[in-house]
Amino acid sequence: MLVKEILSSVEVIPDPYVKSVTYAKIGERLAKAKTKAYKVAFLKAMETAKSIEDPATMFRALLSVGYSMGRAGLKSSKRVYSHVMEDSRILPEPQRDLIMRLASLYMLALGEINEAITYALEICNPTIRDEVLLTIIRVNTRMIEREKVKVAYRLRKSRLALDYMVSEPQRSKAILEVIKAHIALGSYETAVSYLSAIGDPDWAKQGFKEVLFRLRDRDVLGHLIEPLEGVARVLIERFGIDFQYNLAFAFALVGEGEEAVKLLRELGDPELMKKMALKLLELDNNALPSFIGALNEEEAEIVGKAVMNAILEKPELGNDEVVGAVGKSTSSEEVWAKISRYYVIRGELEAAMKIARVIRSPELRSLIMADLSHQLLKRGEVESAIDAALEVRDEKFASILVAEILISALEKELEGKVRLWNGSGKS
Image (cartoon, rainbow, N blue to C red; front, side):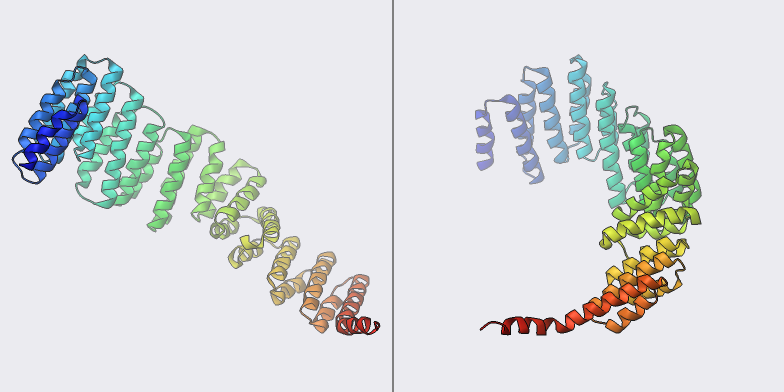
């Protein structure tokens, strides 16, 4: 009895579109509850939709009714959509495009990939059509990544949708989705080959980087360096020399320092090496040792100075791996002096001392030993501070240092007594 009352109460809804959709939603719920009254609800939904005077609104109502029928498991829902596709040809092109877009997205929500593509291809506006096709491909990729069912079918449909796409950047975005699907399936070489088909420079950069990370996470990147380098060459030729830096950075980020440095060397500007190293230091310093390790002596000195300067300014950016890589990459005493300073800041004075003792430059050695002396004195290690000062090869500088240390040590020793004497002078 309650169901009949609810159905009769729908009649009070004044807006025919809302009334039709409401009947359909009630029908969907009744069908799922296996209540026969669902037929009455869907019949009234169809009748109400067809009574709508505005054709575009009528078609939207019919699509909504068909969607509810599909959710209820009724095969007749596809016939509703088929009639809408034919009958809507009376509409102006922009209006029909929006109806076909809605039809496609409804079918996609029902999991009907083939029908979703069919309705999308009825859209005349290439931008709207390609946006819908891109949505279909994205949904397909997510299904492949998550469920691993009907994989071959879904991938085939994604490729079909891609074949009809012409607008950028939608087509490039869609290619990236197809690439993700292939990686999810373990078709790595096919995935890499698709990269060369990307036509938008921003998405080519994004896609290349994303593919590198996905391949690295699957521990297969090392096996695909050669085809990736080939694709990189194709993209550089297409988008110009500026694009080369971006691809080099992508290689560097995933720890492929050799490939990154190789691309950068071709650009002939050592400053770009420095720029990239500093960017890696800020974004992901774990990727830096591989990059530094691929540099030659001349490049390593330029990069080492820049990296150590940045670390000395912000010590939290550094770690033992990065500093160690800098040290191994160059014999530059200027760089090694900076490394020594880093260890002093960290309080690792023994490590700083070891470096200082192998530096031949009197000026650099003097600066390091002076720094060490002051730090040792702060720790209260007066004898060690004097020993460090005496290792300064410049006798005059060493003498001044020792004098400063002794006076400073005396002041610290007498500090308490001086305060007491000042106090006792008052009565």
